[in-house]
Length: 540
Ligand SMILES: O=P(O)(O)OC[C@H]1O[C@H](OP(=O)(O)OP(=O)(O)O)[C@H](O)[C@@H]1O
Ligand SMILES: NC(=O)CC[C@H](N)C(=O)O
Ligand code: SF4
Ligand SMILES: [Mg+2]
Image 1 (cartoon, rainbow, N blue to C red):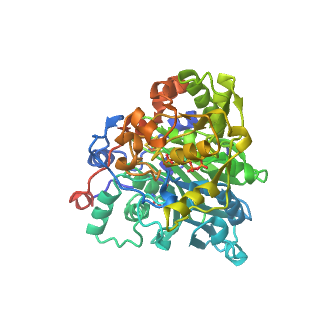
Image 2 (image 1 turned 30 degrees about the horizontal axis):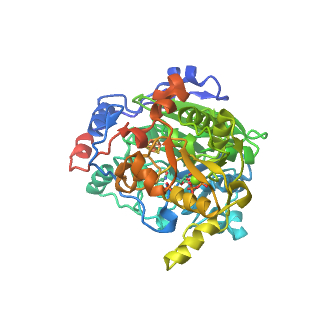
Image 3 (image 1 turned 90 degrees about the vertical axis):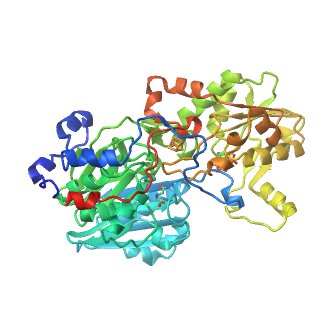
């Protein structure tokens, strides 16, 4: 049998403000099922010690295809949640627009109406397309809502069923969930749940969370959420919505971001990045801490907090700073543009090009790294490439000649900046090498005398397991060749990456708080292989 459900008074520690979090967290340290059960579960999750090396041969997941849209790491997912505003769904919609860069495959919003019923609108494609018909947003009135934009990591991309938030009914009412991250023990959990009779509606990893909540024997919902999350391994920033509450959760490693803010009318807002808070006039207050569960009760707008067990070392995704997040966001308590500028400065220190004429960024995300490179080196900064934003991602063309022209549609050189010059081109990252190869070709065609490629992050040698849809290990160019091989492949006169040591140096004492597995292959949590087990039967 499961441990007795803890009483409500042990669970809820209300406070009207969310400041002084660390103090509260010590006070509120809480286990839904304290105990042997939690410990046994975690040992069965096979959480690896922090920094376990994934063997070179192992290709954990296979992502991506080979069309034009898969040339680079795709983003991940974005979350927005609002409680206490009569226009909650519309605010979610705007926030999701701002987070569109985090997911283009599908979007959705679940809102709670005045009658306490949850309603959902989801669709494949961009936020503006899904909610293009105004009646769709109009069908979601009410004071609380959560929204999601998706790039899949598990489960088919083109399946409407996999588009979040997921909305389910169970014996205690309705609950919706939105997830950013990837669960590395999802298949193992799903096998166990299916063996007990659960019927799955999607092929997404996220759905196991709802089943774990429904089958938990703890009370109340906060305890069920803690119970469910403590069985998950991997990356999860989550928003849950019920008739009267919104919960925000981050996994104990804190891989993915999630922040909390407040609107002038007191409404509480959650978002993956602060750029979404800025848009909806919500003031950023703080991060949801790794391992924290924040609960907002819309009836009295009280905010309370609990934390998951066990406590694990912080492992925030460094790639959020390098590439994924928008530069005007604050992520993991750092200004993203400030981090990128520092990466560029460090790169200029480490791998200067003293005789070059000009520094140009690869738009969009290479901008601040190039600015940093220019400031550190004293070389002139110019916009030498113009990014055309209307070409779409899936531009698949029948012949190589037409494909070459299509590349020029997306990125165009500014001839006056390039012609006859020795050019330093700075990009934030190099993954398959496709972007760099194309750019070197374009710049040479535009008359560049020399092209020096500088990458403001280390070579990507490992696929992400934690919510970024990166290509498989075999498709990563730096996995297949050494530095000189990559240089020849992309065709530049020189090539240099920021070293991992230098990257760590920028973070100083905080360096160990970040996941850098795609550069180091030190994976904080290894995938759990599915295996038959009678664990569920033992627990009942
Ligand atoms: O080596 P590759 O496989 O080509 O991938 C790396 C490129 O992909 C990303 O840019 P992306 O075109 O996604 O968009 P952004 O810079 O505009 O955000 C990244 O900034 C690099 O430029
Ligand atoms: N990139 C993500 O965060 C995706 C969330 C979830 N794993 C999905 O595939 O839908
Ligand atoms: S493996 Fe790379 S992209 Fe994935 S969480 Fe770690 S640092 Fe981020
Ligand atoms: Mg780029």
